[in-house]
Image (cartoon, rainbow, N blue to C red; front, side):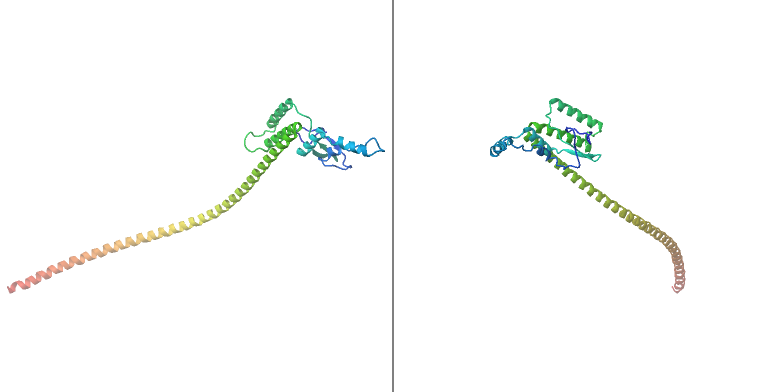
Length: 258
């Protein structure tokens, strides 16, 4: 059976679960496999019951590791041809060669899926998340406490990334709103600029008309002043001549009397 998606996290062989039977949750499956067996001595039930708890109270490290692994890394399940398949995380301890192989697979998948080396890259984040889950699996098999601590670190990192993603999405939405507002303000401003330019052209036309009127008035007044000055000068000359004539006549009248 082919799993639904290839992952750096190591899984066991998929198990077929009949859809007609009762389906248990992945966390309950390992607990269901170990039912208590009745004691061989049937007539005397009390002594066997006393012995069974003492033997069953001894924790099985393998089952305990499987339970912790299933709690940390839940099994994945999918439906194919109306059949439910479940695949649990592998509980096989890893060796040094497995870690080296994990590193090689990580580099290979980063190259195959063309993950970006810098910046935000969902592909790179997904692959490194799978690699970190595989490291948690390997550590949990050897030391459950250390694995649980790494789980807390992983969840904290995911919460931080989710917070950054929410902040990024809100900032993008805020930026889009501001861009739309700026675009709306830009159109209003362009409309106002067009109106002001029309008003400016109208005022310039009025200014040119007033300048033309002013120049015509100045020219007309200059010509009128020149005419008035010429007329005034002629009157002055006439009055001067008349004055001289009258003065000469007056002198002619006064002279014989002496």
